[in-house]
Image (cartoon, rainbow, N blue to C red):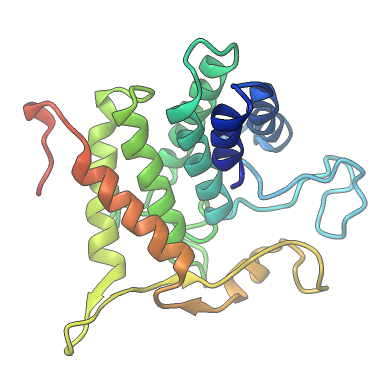
Length: 238
């Protein structure tokens, strides 16, 4: 989450020194958390393999949490928007963004166009379509297209995602208030015995309306989608 701010500081106040430390965060994360079968990134990895939530052999947590993936692709696309294209790691980060979003596209709900709390278990009892992760992923797709990392073939996926955000999560009340529903309030690993990374844990956290993590990402997604210039042939609904 902090990498875009870190990068902007280095560019503004350090003359662009130390950029490798920013790019390293994304490279290491993908290296250690990427699932070879799905291409998705697990929520966390413990190098020492001592945390109660991790696999004792791999160090990985057991599930793919939507918002952890959302934070990752949102921060990554923001970094790519500022990172000089001549930087040695630019193409690596562009490849990571494309690969991670491609994996997420495979688990995009076919009907709703958005993503589940545990992204690869859409049909499992208790799972639900979640607003903050869906907004973050939609934002990353829209900005990825705008900055030229993703090609025009992504417009169809993006349009389905954006339309899904509005249809699935936005509700206008009788009093004229507009709410963003189905936000996971918070989720994490460790610190408490119940934060064990199991499927049951992720679906047990409170689901709230107008959580700031969801609202912020939703507004960013809307802004990128409306700002995006597209070929007339692929122009989506307004």
